[in-house]
Image (tube, rainbow, N blue to C red; front, side, top):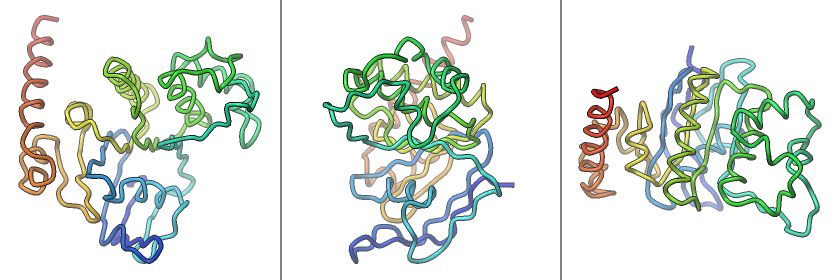
Length: 238
């Protein structure tokens, strides 16, 4: 059974149509990435799935009892708020010490426990947000541009961590990303969104689709080919 099925989803915000006729299915263990230009409804789709946005048409069906972890695109933290990483994990409800420790260890952030949240770097903050999403062992992780603001090494490290989590937890991952070259390398399926689903399928299929090229040009095809070559070449020597 699919974890999530989205059928004919339509959303208008402030009277302006943002999504129309969006269909999507997500199964356990998959990494699926949503790409699209600014304003294409990517964050709105994620927020519709978690129930923060009520659709105007269509429906989102979730597996009964589905456990979801969500990492939002931005979290506004008041820099004057004296809250530690450990205290932050207790919001909105307290979590057991063992669960907090396990989550922080999973993302390599165990050394940050007592640090003030306001003093974290971008990369550290992303790990803490991810740790918070992992409490409760989700079957589905929703990540909204999780590497925004990270440099390239930090970004690559984060995607490696996501892949490890998928293997360790067996969860599905649905993420929004603007880093096309990384997305193509890190995803099982890609959904190209621009108010509606323009095209979807394997990274190779989407990279060569005319709808995708109309939005993003042909640059990613070369990046994808280069990645595959390096990846295969590297594995040949292992």
